[in-house]
Length: 93
Image (cartoon, rainbow, N blue to C red; front, side):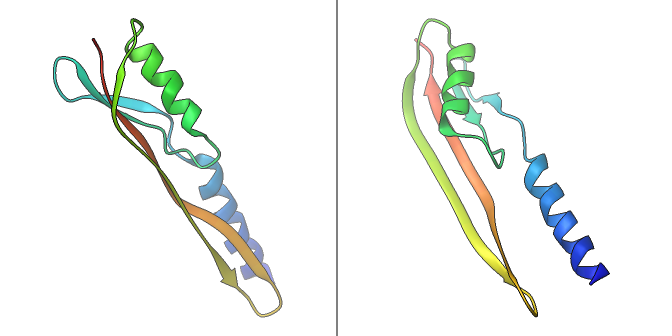
């Protein structure tokens, strides 16, 4: 029982941590904006893109993928979401 509580606590901690949105400059006017936090949304990428390119931007590509699964225990199933991949490749004018 105690082992299950520890595992569930660890899974919950990983889910809450996530990564904060950030951008990486790829060229003088092109940026890769990543927002892969667990409970975030694509709008987090949009907000960061607007901050990165205040005069506007063109979206060259975008990805919003989330996988999910379940851990099956002796007497319960724990559903989880993992591998959040959200990003936008943008170009500032």
